[in-house]
Length: 347
Ligand code: PHE
Image (tube, rainbow, N blue to C red; front, side, top):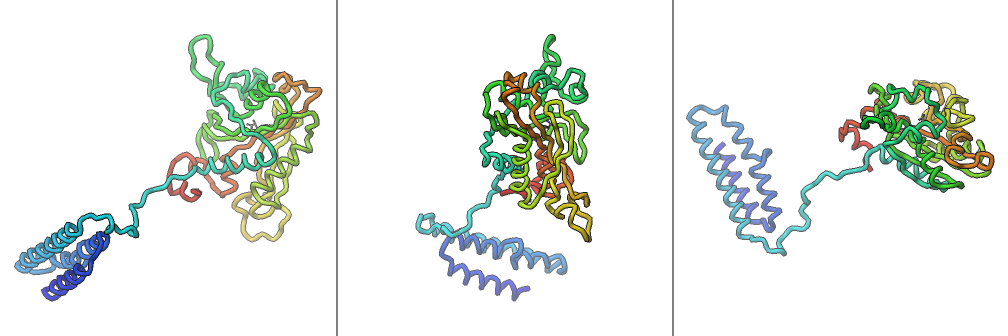
């Protein structure tokens, strides 16, 4: 022990004599006094010594520690803080950089696919009235979605109850824009929507949707198919196909649900799969959105002549698309603010 202390002291004074910058002094402080220093190791040997030795070595090592520390201080003081001696190569203190949330990134990526086709981005209202959220969208008063169990109605003073709500989908953006602006229109409208669903791996009381629609004199279902195929190939993979299944929405006629062929296992046609596809579970298709031709009643409710103009509309859930694209199996990850999850998608 005695020998080790002597060597330590010598090498320290040698090192100290060579030091030229503040950064080097700091380096020596870590080397000789830090958690992994030889001195710390010597301290850790004390418990195994005899009672008598403990006292001596405790004292010796403390004296050495103080000596090293005050020599380092002196060195720093002697250097002063002249600007030309500041070591510009010394790494700066690190700081955490923020990044975009994955849902923001996915929303922007989806919107970009449509912007490239000439769609304009317009934000709707999160607090809506029944007129825009339901009536103008051809959703009758007795439709189940208008039930208080399926929509968050806002508690307002007497006489106004039930009139305002947290929008249950982004489709009211259609009616807001069409009342305000006249065709030709090509609009994409992202935002939050709210439904009183119990939270589980695939449901949340708040989530995000992207609405899209186009209105003009010659718009047909073929345009809808073309636009959505372009989007799917731009966003998922250039070799995906789409499948349109007949469906019902009050605000579109005809209506369809759209599936994209699995961009991981490359769809149902590929045979001889060894592992079950983690994304489509070997179904080959993934449901991605709802769509259709805008119902004439909706156009008329927005004072657009349904004899002269036609339109298509579609709506998709951002969380669902992000979950498919990145193989995320629980919607709650998006909202927990856990950087271990979020960091994986930071750009
Ligand atoms: N608003 C529908 C929903 O929330 C989606 C949709 C939008 C369907 C536009 C057709 C046209 O499920």
